[in-house]
Amino acid sequence: MKEIVIKIDEEEYRMIINFKKVYDAVIEAESDFNDYMRDVIREGLDKMLTDLPPKNVNVLLRTLQAMFRENPEFVCNFIVQVLKKGSNISQEEEVRIKEIRGHYIS
Image (cartoon, rainbow, N blue to C red; front, top):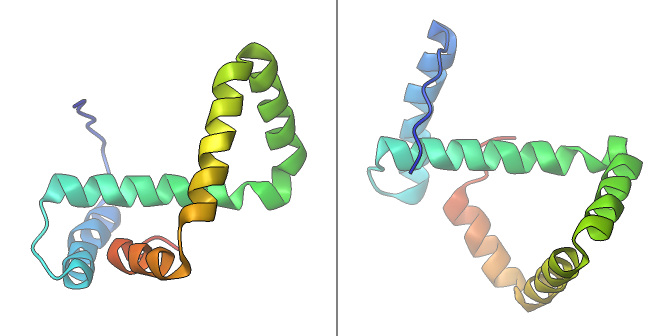
């Protein structure tokens, strides 16, 4: 694993430390701080990526097309995996995953 060190202000520190209580309550366990931070970062990145399409659909489409020209095997295999995975996840499983993850960053 890689290590990243960042500087945050007092308000950000208080939010991170205190929100861990909410995170732990949702998962019904005391979490490791590193696991908690990885989930916060992962969810934040996912949310940021999710927010991109309405404003930048053309940019994302052109990016996908450029990636396809550069590495068609990878892009096609990836798209097939995503499509298969999406069609295999039941609504109950999707709800369960959302509950576990807690969708902490909105």
